[in-house]
Image 1 (cartoon, rainbow, N blue to C red):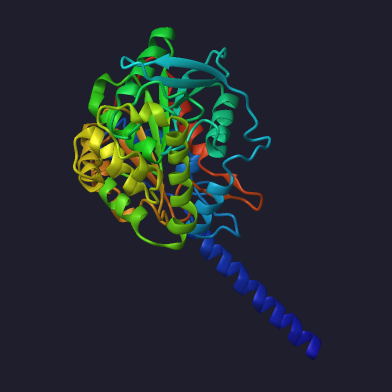
Image 2: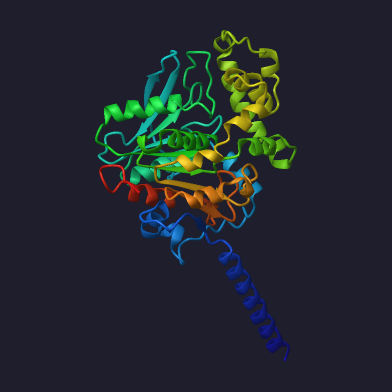
Length: 390
């Protein structure tokens, strides 16, 4: 009798576990926002060619079991920056590009001699081509037949700072120059763009500013902070993630650039307070001391308010996919312009329940989930030689 009761108890426990896991899995279904009222549209493109986002059986982002929250996902991503494995082990070929003010950008190429479309990638604030998630995407795109180039901003990714001007996510001129340089070298090759975090905000601004004249056939923005004022406040508040992981890493990367290029930055006619800059502890401090002043704003908060890209969504005329997570601690879901995305046939949003900021790790052995949807979408968008017209 005891044995039979044990079997019954085990069966009940097993059934409860199965049902619980099934419910959890169902909540990890990817939610896609985008208009289907006009055809073709970016949403229609996803429905036809991107099963990882739209298939009832495949469109799930189930987080790694020991990374079930946004804080853990974001923290894990930050700790993987220098990791090398078979998914990320690549070698770049560097090209330097001089700007009109004698600044320097670096273009890190992978699979440059391939015959496929060219994907241009931008990292987030303080990031570069050397970050783990960037290298993983570069290799995934290269394996899919793309030529890939990562644009490193001024002073980042071991790029020499040759003018006092520093990178900021509201100025699209460097990215535009890089695109024209690549277009001039490869006039018949489709160009697509992928960008992360602050880089994604800059990419959003570019495709909005250029409208139907964009040089890109398609673009993807991952963990994009559309409402920069809200994101700035999120980053400035005290929390475990901000105080111990995200803010220290970003500030440290920015201050490394300052220390390496102290004399060049100090030579700027604006006459920055270098002592205060070197002692900055918050991203908002750095932006108030440098970025806001170079753009003519009194402080970072005025800069952030002016730099938000929510209203830019209306003017996008390039197939544009946004990938964000509901538990993103830097870009909360209520800051996403879902109504605008749904009303513009060129734009679509893939929103997952778990993923954090730039995390999106899935599987027992963590791997980056969004690599597959990005490759699917860009492959579909470049099937034709010319830019698809929606």
